[in-house]
Image 1: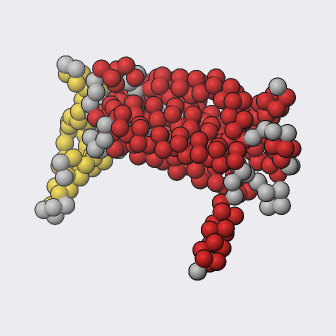
Image 2: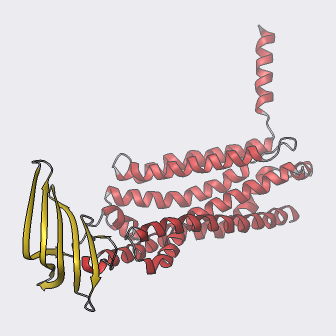
Length: 368
């Protein structure tokens, strides 16, 4: 059918053009953030491109959903602005008739969004987490590069080595600044060497000085030593939030604690939200040829950000135990679906709200 094929072809052009632009913008923003993390020592600088690829892939569900929504709004706004929609309506077509071609076009896209949100998102998080953990679990001396200050894996020490020997376990002119149990310590030594005692590793310093500062008691101690040991390779604690974000949907269901259900609520909400945005993308756009398309685009973007913020809030509500997953999904997404159907009916009937209000006000004033 000409009406459907024309709409789908234009929708395809807008979708791919928007997707390319959004991916470029997101990659630029994430690249800056990833480089910042690498400069702080959170990730390996040699793996920046790999982490960037996983991060972009993990966020593709939102990018694709927004591209589909903008494509629908932009296509219909153009049709209204060029009076093309008026011509179709005069031939007996309505805005509700666009739902079928919109859903036919969006069906494979929604399947991709579902796969990205439910499966790809946790997989990319698991890969990124593995890269970070592998880099964070390096020994403290391995993290230090000659002539550079570097933070330890635990985050409570700063190391500096002026010059390294050919051995990977020895260094010279070592400086360590640490803060542990309320004490601030500054340690300097002529040389340092890593020794293994069981599964633990220790940095043995030779010919140095240790300064201990107790801010609470306002005390300063200076200790000269010929040999001093410091434990290395502390492993940071894992967070339950990271575990939930890296778990597959069936793993979350097998362990239905509030935190896992909150994560699953968020993922399912992304899929339901993408479907609702297809309906809203057909119901919202309406452009007066004399006023331009800005109003519809602003309204569409405002709707998208409010809706997606509510989806993020729903995860926290379920994770805190205030709501159950089924009730949260119904309360958040069902009204949006109803609102989209009402908007489609409104456009199909071509009801003018201002005209109705004006008639009601004129009737009441005449009756008075």
